[in-house]
Image (cartoon, rainbow, N blue to C red):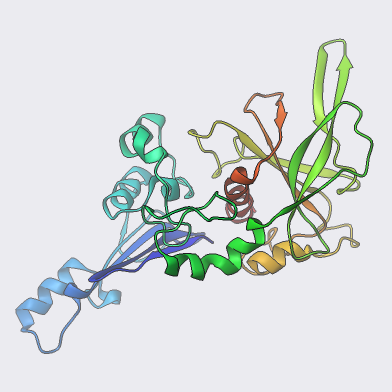
Length: 308
């Protein structure tokens, strides 16, 4: 379940999503802290503003059936997330049903191009990672703290396809079942023609045997980003949960941990691929670049959490 924190003084906040609370926002303000030395009247104000379980020091909202504080609709939640400084790019990670016109109000053209710190999600004015030139940080401290995770994708390597390329190929991200590190791989792009015309398909047989499952970021509930100009495809062995032979995906477990990212109640198994295309019904596949990796991995995270 995604959970973000913003540490500040006097305000500290957390927001995210879980199956019980839905999307939640919890704001802690030191100035509202219950104080035994304060008068009874002062502490009454503190208790009235916050919730009893928080000792009067929390402001809590949630969209699910259960949770602290007030239950609100998706639009109200998005408004308060914005008021407390949550970047639009992070609001987009949460399963909120918002119309395109409402997004235009909270996400201006300038905000779409604003870099945010990969760790604390504040607006970043510092330089990008000097090695990959993809992610940004607001400070040296955030960069150092995020390095154990970022280094997995920062120096990612490419490997060629083992099959002869009949037509042409595109690049995709492989999360291998037997290695800790992801790889960029070359997938042959095949063309098939019939009486109705032709279409292209990715040949993933090098990496995924048997029955294949596929999910698209622009067709999966809880994962759709109306602002995105492309779609990401999650490709996996569809029957790995019942075939009894597929091995646990070491790469996903190494990066995210077994409990944090899983396929339903079990860890991901066998190889997993992330590919890129346009948003047409019969997609035209494109090579996934290093700059696409953060958004592609976000789709894997949201698919694992929101749809399984």
